[in-house]
Length: 338
Image (tube, rainbow, N blue to C red; front, top):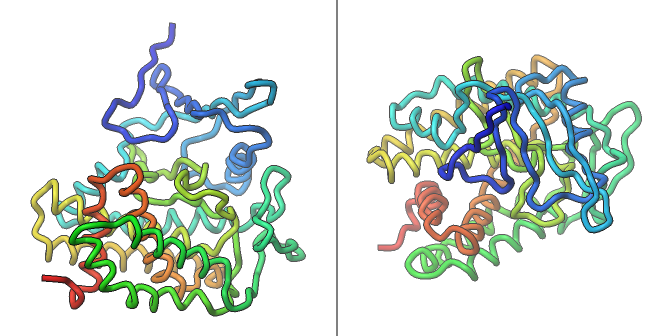
């Protein structure tokens, strides 16, 4: 009989994954997801687009649950010696190494190039009513010009308001004191967003980037489990911002768990971020798609992401609050409260 094992209690996962015979990974969705579900189509599209920097998809298991057909599990190839970014990237931060960030930028750009050709109106997914647009002729990405008070701005302001309401103590006082500065950052989202909207990963952080014996691979295309009703088609900058903030979180983890000096950790995060973005831009330019990234959106999306990290910490994992607060204090040291 094939041997089966899980990933261990140290691995934080929304669903439940097991490794079978060191050959395949079966990710059981908990709970099962009603069909139609976009992930099988998305994985098939990545294969067709020639994007291979992910665990190879093998099968989707479906079946009835309470009278409705559901996606029960996804079966993908096992990547030997794989470690997620909350392990390998923290090692890089503690050692002060940033060479990995070039590969990370190339991987992310390659992913977005592949996703930019995913049909904007997939039969298995839809956009939210206020952001729905018809597919552009001859292209899968859509270009939108939204009026002032865009859905992106409304969503970001709501995240800031919720973070302010949920963050207490000294951190809460610091956040309240800096709220106007953060709102100012978010005002960039009030301008019309004219960059193409593509099918994004939706939960792209270093924990979704595996380092394995043959390189790096991105996994888990199910979207952000903490954000309800998120439009799967958004500017690529949304994914980029989540990835850059996760590098900042890695620096905070290195400070807390590896005794890395804060100034050295901050310098590492800045260099890793710059290196990753340079490689990302270069890969898009090489494919004549620099239009996929509007860099003016990165910082407001980063601020929103840190607010969402604070919300997540307040609602699910209080001990995590040190990471987003550490990042915000690093970005805005002049507002630190003594």
